[in-house]
Image 1 (tube, rainbow, N blue to C red):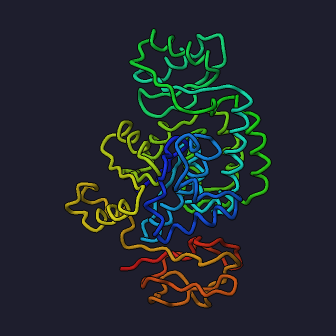
Image 2: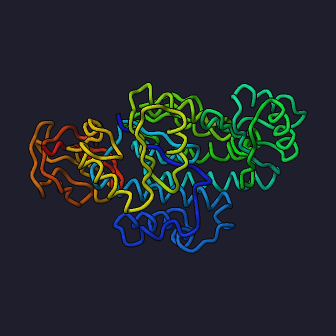
Image 3: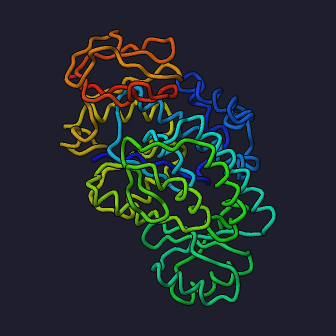
Length: 392
């Protein structure tokens, strides 16, 4: 099975959107700017590192660029069996699964980043990675400190992030070294994320979550809070709120993806941090990071040449849905399928599969309908999958 994973805050870098400006998927940047009332293009193209380190900027830019990458990959027809995202990346994963519309996710991410920025400004906090020490010993190191410090991320074996007040984090680092940690690395962040310090942000986010629609994802999404895969909508608002004050169970999430049968992990978005974590955590898996248009070409080349590709092992192709394509909505509105369209029905290039609002939804592919992914009368968003085709 194929997993899409999405990075969180910290993967951003200056001018990380420059390679996408001439790509069709760049149109999402303008849409995001209109939705949240901020100049996302400027942040992706000209903002300096110091500006991008601000939580309100790093979260918005990382999310939007991840969606640009996802859109570019979806246009090729490659789709996942399951998705997961690290912290902020969970919103990207829910978009990939169709649980959140792009517009709603932009609003939530903008609100989340602003709320976490304010919480961090009000409560001085920091984070540090503890390397080369077992999880339980990191927990013990934090417990031995008379101060506010907790485990924030379980990233990979021997890589755990702690967070809290600067003084308590420094003391926990010393305790961790006494217990055998190889080293500790301070993280360039302005707050103690995924700890009780984020309680004010959680309360504000809960209000924002009540104003959006969360749908059942088309593919299971593994949650940060408990590393469980879910394919329903009911629990996600609470999970997203709880995530702000709970440790990210990323290593456990990777194990869960592996147990589901995922052998190929494709990271979509800036950087390749999650790719490294997957390699470190799991054995006999194939990984690839997609951050630029050239990386999309690499993904497609790997899919097209499975027999000799050095990126994907022989036999992985069936899990990459090489022969399957998604027909997506050209706009937002109510979907009405074409009369008589059903599973196993053959459509040709240019055939109408339905209407959204007043626009015809025409298939850019020739193939057999495997499933309709939108119901008659359902309100859909632009680029939301409508039909799933097998092309040969």
